[in-house]
Each structure stands twice: as structure tokens, then as C-alpha cells.
Amino acid sequence: MEREKLGSRLGFILLSAGCAIGCGNVWKFPWMCGQYGGGAFVLLYLIFLVILGLPVMIMEFSVGRASRASVIKSYQNLEKPNQKWHYHGKAAFLGNVLLMMFYTSVAGWILYYFIKFVKGDMTGITDTASSQLFGNMLSDTSVMVIFMAIVVVLGFLVLCFSLQKGLEKITKYMMVLLLILMVVLAVRGFWLDGASEGLSFYLKPDLSKIDGSVVVGAMNQAFFTLSLGIGSMAIFGSYIDKNRTLMGESINILALDTFVAIVAGLIIFPACFTFDVEAGAGPSLLFESMAKVFNSMAGGRIWGSLFFLFMFFAAMSTVLAVFENILACVREITGWKRIKACIICCIGILILAIPCALGYNVLSNMHPFDSNSAILDLEDFLVSYCLLPLGSLVYVLFCTSKKGWGFDNFLAEANTGKGPKVGAWLRPYLTYVLPLIIIFIFIVGIVTFKFADNFTILNNWIMPLFK
Image (cartoon, rainbow, N blue to C red):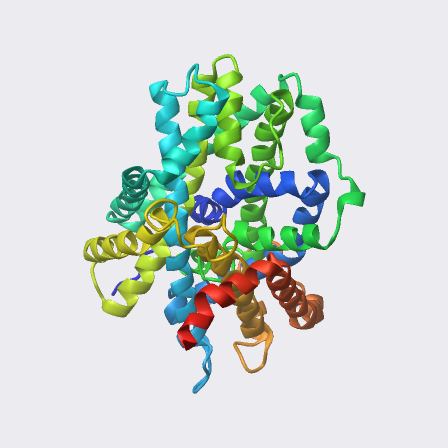
């Protein structure tokens, strides 16, 4: 099968940034920032992006570009005879599938709210009705399944076209519109009455609020927002040439991803403090809370529509990127043409995503953690707290260990082309310190993930297997 290539460097940057930019930036980052103390969390998040996210991203891109293959085949092309690194390729493929099993539902929520604002259904309703809308949406089986299905079908419909005429072309337009919408919404937020208070909470670090949970939360968010560890970035490395160093390209992508996350906060926190909305409201912040904000704002129908449109573009950029990774893996294994693979993958993801869509209605009695948890929480936990950090660890070990690809091979690939290069002096940090930090993230993340709820997993999911 002839391997497709991206048409331009800009396409690569926007596609890779689109994979990183998504619900992690515009949904998860703001509510985690609100819950973990605002500016203190932002400061740690930025630090971890540079010392953790950047090197792992460079390694993923290096493996992808050197192997010219998807995550399943990439290790096989680079590992030495009789090595077993390729097992992670299979786990990473499953991680991409698992991510889309719940991510498509969240994208569906965003699309649902966008349509509600465009139709004017949110105009003039009470705060109580606005709060109830989110719960009513979750409990409505048809709404949850239909909007998830729209996201899945729309994503694979785009991918049915060639890499350049489908994914690359659509992502370029979508990312440009996303950035324009964000700037417009952020500028609007600066003129709100509570802007100064909101921006102070968001951008002024209060170091007294930093504790273990804030540190671990910032670390995990740095991995989640960049989709590192499951090969979602490596696939785009396999589509580019060797004209530019991978550090330079990674810095560009990291900067764009960070810009979107920071601007998302500039939109949300001034509005929260203006309309007395709890900034630490949690996952419902962008649905229940922001719906109240726009309902209280002059011209709220327009601003709400623009807000959820930008959110949908952000979510779909990740959906398209991860779908392409899944598609590339399936095509390399089967040899199928793009359209056939799209149809079969679309059906497969639709089936696998149904449990999450039903997790708040038909399957609402399934609580993997506490009584408020749902299937989405379990899937998110497996991806965010397990597969992403562990997968990142495998990439680091593969690129630095003599029993893997090796540091010299990694360095040569990463530094091929024009642009800033990875210094050989970083070898001790990348080989010894970075793996220990990632192991720390994984262990502490597991231990601190509502420790009592882990007994719920033991009692409800594991112990019944032995009865």
C-alpha cells in the first residue's frame, strides 16, 4: 500500500496541534484550573508541558518519522530482532479506540448545546431550567446516541477523502476558524464587569494553593492535553519529510496548543466572576455554568453559539486526528482501501461508543467508582491515568535505551533538518530523570485517584469474577 503524505508543513503543524487541541484544552483544562486554584495550576501546567510534554512529543514524532508507519507497525520497523516493544503498539492502538469511545460522546454534548443556542432554545430560560438541561440531555437515550453518532459519522466521512483533500484541508479551515472565534470571545470577555477579578484568579499564581493533588493534576493534564503515549502524534510524524528538526516542529505545536488552553481560560473565568458562577464547578462548568452565563449576557444567543461552535471545532480536530490514527493502523494491517476502512472503522467505533452514551441513562446503574460516576469516568481513568503516562514511559525507554531503538538513533532522527536541535547534553535527563518523573506521575495518580473509590472498583468489578 502506497503511503500517503501531507501536502505542506502548515498542514502537519495544524493537524498535530489539532490532535493536541481539543476537549483537554477547552473543557478539561478550565475546570481543572478552577478546582486546583487558578494561577498556581496554570504555572505548574506550563512547566510540565516543557519538561515532560515537549521531550515525549519529540520522541513520538521521531518514532513515527523514522518508521514511516502507524503505531502498530512503527516498533516493528525500528526494534531489533526478537524484541517485544511492538506489544506497546497494540496497546496504543487500543488506547486510541478507548479514547474515542468516550470522547465522541463529549463532542456530541458540545454539538447539542451549539444547536440549542443557534435555535434560540436557551434564550430567556431560567437558571433552573438551564441547569436541568444538562441532566435531561444525559438521561435522554436518543439524544446521547444520535449526537455521538453524528460526530462519528461526520469524522469518518471527512476521512473518506484522501489525506490531503480530506483531513488536511478540512483541519486547516477548522483550525483557522477556531483561532478567530477564540480571539473574538476572549476580547469580549475583557469588557465584562468581573474581568479583572477573573483574570487575577486565573493568571496570578497563589503558591499557597500548591499541594500534591495540584502537582499531579497539572502533570496528568500535560499528558492528556497533548494526547501523548498512545501514538496519536506519531502517525503525523510518519506523514512528513525530513526538512525540519522535530524539536522545532514540536515547539510550534506546543505553543499553539498552549495558546488555545490559555485563551480558553481568558474566555471562561472573566465570565464566571462577572455572573457569579463557581469557577471550580468541575466537568459541568462548560455546560451548566457557561449556559447560565450566556443566558444572562446581552446578546447571549450569539455569544453562546460562537462559544460552543469554537468548542466543537476544537473537539472535532482531535476526533479527526485520532480517527486517522485508528484508520492508518487498520489499513496497514488489512491492506484495505481508505473508503472501505472508513466504513468498517465507523461501524466499529459506533458500536464501541454506545456504552458511554448509555452510561447516564440505560446503564446509569453502573458506577465504577463512587455513586456519581459513570462508564465515561472509567474510560477516562484508563486513558488519562494509565495508558497515557505508561505509553509515554515506553516511548522514552524505547528512544533512550540500548535495548530499544537507542539514544543515538533517536537523536539523529530528531535533529535531521533545519531548526533547533535536541542537545546531546540532555541525555542524562531523558534517560534517567524523565522516566522516573513519569513513573511518579503514574503511581501518585493511581493512589490519589479517590482512593476510597478504588475499593469500589475492587468490590464491584474484580471480586465478582472470583465468585
